[in-house]
Length: 286
Length: 293
Image 1: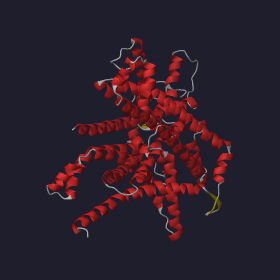
Image 2: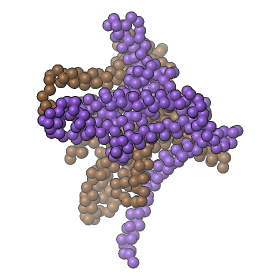
Image 3: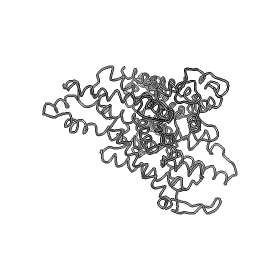
Image 4: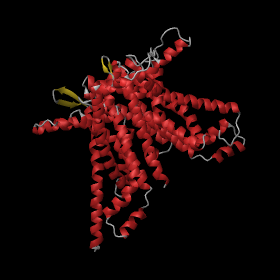
């Protein structure tokens, strides 16, 4: 059970074997996705036809590599655009929320806090359709009242950004609040005693303290937005973000160009994930 | 009479707090509360003619009259509960191993290894399973090579495959809360259990599991909710017969353009999900705020 309690070697071995099997289960799908990016075949499946880099750099015939696949590259751009705005908005609003919930006292605070957490327990598809229905109602109302067709309230990138922002803000709020809770308020008071204005104290003492959480929350928000599927699916218009574009290709059956793209995504998001872990860990120990 | 200076700063602080509250209120009202109220209202109306609607319960009665709809609903709920239970069963020993058996650096490395796959998009992970399980896939070829199967084996498009994918996708949300709750269990309690004559089974039942209950509850709640609302995994691994309720919602909204009925379905799924979350919280005597922090 624990190292200090002697156990028969057979059970120890059995347990370690189970853990090994578990990690094979975890890694197998990711490894095959990566490996088949180098298969010289038109389909991401067996048999193995020898290694190639065509699915990265190829430009002729059916062998179009990811760096020459205009449509996929475009959708990467769309996703990055969406993720940028979602990150900016959700970290800003999350910071305001964190200060509000940690510092201010006001009636109805607990109720508001529960409502602020609720996006975590609303399935993404439902969040998507409710925002779709509501924005459509507003757009129709405006059109009937004054005859303007407000284009950005119809399915499209604006709604995708708004929809992702709606639940990612809960996560940034939680991450930043957790850090703000650890802040020793006497540091801020000391700055005020030494003659700093409220703003100066905020910008030179509190915000630098929050920086790891802000960066961490930003990375998480960016990745969650980039990889979101459920909410995006219901709100997407003609510009498809990456997940939607890949989903369509997968349904049709695709060449291993998707493997090459997935491999690149894994490397980038794995790197960002490690970065966020280290940014938050180093500062915590000081 | 109040001191003018202090009431001045008090007013400024109150004004500042109000300004700080604006984004929160806008976010919650415009993007969370009002859309869901509107969703309920839309689900309670019937389209009479172009642009004319009347209050009606027809979208809900339709759901109960058409067996396909509520069968899919029940099926989604049952499979989600099964997936949650399986995730717990598979994830618990792993979490225990990471929290209690491993020591030092190896522990952190193993924990990180558990997390990394989940930073990769769900789409990529599901794609991986498709490559492994399809007729011309890795496992099918391996079975033929090993002489276990005579011809290609199609392992996609059935319920067991959907389950494998769902458990895989949910694992992180079970392992993280379990590891953190098991980490807080003092080794001496387990040792005391053994000293008092317990064995692995009784110590697990009477000490480890009661201690881990909050983690089990929050893990199960999150996994259940994510599974219920999943669209990708059942759709890609289950194919045409996956019969997942989110697909019904998608069909009503996007394919049939019947928003009234789609809203009713969405609302029913939301009720189911909230109800199970609420029951889970009540049973484990927790609140939502405790579960997420």
